[in-house]
Length: 70
Image 1 (tube, rainbow, N blue to C red):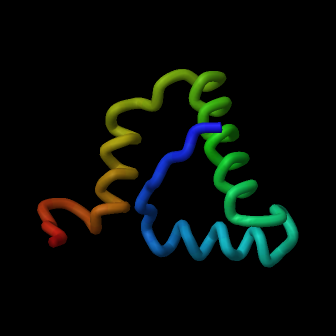
Image 2 (tube, rainbow, N blue to C red):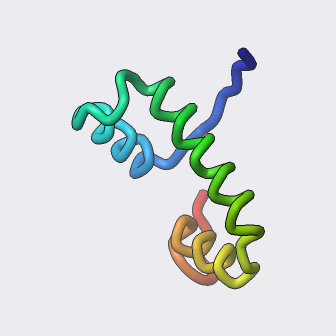
Image 3 (cartoon, one colour):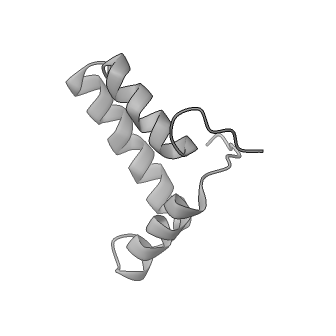
């Protein structure tokens, strides 16, 4: 199995921790593996996301239009 290292926003980390706490997953590794698999399957079955949808999600993640975070 390959190993990767990623940085994720704290809000996602909290959501993953909550899923584990609720018993959806045994541990963080299982949760992340399953959630990545679900995301890939969803992307493949629904096709590529529209650019506008991607931009909207990106702006939500980054804090809105024309804001810079350092």
